[in-house]
Amino acid sequence: MAEQGFQAPVTIAMTGASGAQYGLRLIEVLVAAHHEVWVMISKAAHLVIATETEIELPARPVRLAEALTAHTGAAPGQIRCFGREDWMAPVASGSGAPSSMVVCPCSTGTLSAVATGASNNLIERAADVALKERRQLILVPRETPFSAIHLEHMLALTRLGAVILPAAPGFYHRPGTVNDLVDFIVARILNQLGIAHRLMPRWGE
Ligand SMILES: Cc1cc2nc3c(=O)[nH]c(=O)nc-3n(C[C@H](O)[C@H](O)[C@H](O)COP(=O)(O)O)c2cc1C
Image (cartoon, rainbow, N blue to C red):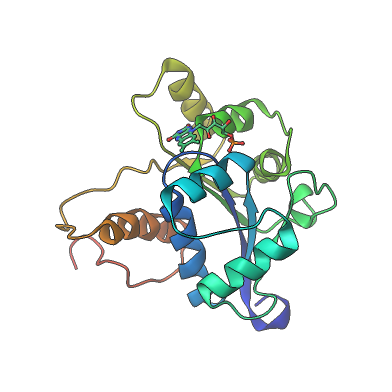
């Protein structure tokens, strides 16, 4: 348990790939599972969220945390948000970063920055910290088709220990709604994190 009685914090970064619903649902499910959730949302991700959803999220971290708390029904202090250049945030250092980070959705731009260690913003830095500390890093890219550049970066990151979990839902559970497709991917992320869920049955259940 972390401070205030929450389960261990998980870092969630949303970047500007299509699929904002995946990241928002992931935050919601982690909150329901009583985890502390540390959130970073890139500028492009804000644009994607505004394009793909009805949710209005302010840019300033304090206001963003308030809006996400209201949206997910989180307890006070359960969601913390950090800004693009908040270099003093705990995620910026191996001594403060949580043991798990998920970039969901992950743009090909952020994928490339993480693969090359660019660390030009806090999301990229936090992912770089996860890699250098050999912590859990899960990236959920969404693009189609993939270029050789994207594929090479994904291979490099896999070899570094990151998990590439593409936003490519299956259909064998016969999804009836978009939410079913979203939950397919969120369930796979939770499986990787080792967090129990009932979003959908595991294979063979
Ligand atoms: C509505 C919208 C949809 C986008 N969809 C994708 C996408 O699916 N995959 C992707 O890699 N980039 C996509 N982009 C482009 C990225 O947002 C852009 O490359 C941006 O620089 C990524 O920055 P970030 O990684 O800091 O979030 C999209 C942009 C917009 C506005």
